[in-house]
Length: 312
Image (cartoon, rainbow, N blue to C red):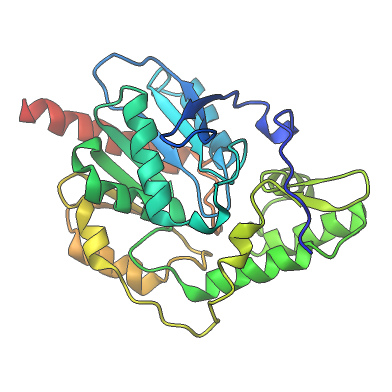
């Protein structure tokens, strides 16, 4: 049986990102939201959307660069979908899915008084942004997709499922830490063990009995059971096309197993106006912690603002 979900809001990985909760349309359902920067200044906030089972802590370094860089003060929104991080589980649990998360994303952005935003989506988070854009195109001022496209690599889904199931068996803190290091070294081969240990705390916490408890609803793992390693999933190009009306930046990490290179190249071909960036030596999720990629994102944001001013 899967370990129960860990919901302690004082978990160390959360410390740099205090949140408040925004109610959805269903009673008892609310999303954890972190806001920083100056809102109400007429610039579109950047809304960061994490991957499938992940949470806003994946943007910890990205926010830190914002706080001390040339974009300091720019409005920034981080959020946890239901069943992840500090948001409660979805009720009923059978209702998890990208369309449900897309509806929640649109609801929360609107509730925050945001008329349009620059959405930064990693993996599954980018697909949720595409689905939201189908219903609320005017909310999208621009999009930054990181290891995200109209087709997910089935190999990545199977590896994720296998890794999460593997972790459930551990009953020793030391063994669990070694397991995390082996798994995450594939995505971050240059990082020392100490940093790998910190990254593991973004999805799990080791309890007093040495068990790794997930920071997400374990029901999410069961939704991956249908996928096989050699499945070829159909590309949803109409979903990708929902973002055609707004500027786009496409980022791929060289070690990702979520987005195939040929899919990324086809995205670039279909959107020749998009800014394309490759991050070397990392997998998913991208850490977004290097000055070069942050400067590329900053330049893209400045281009978006220039286009908005020119359109007025």
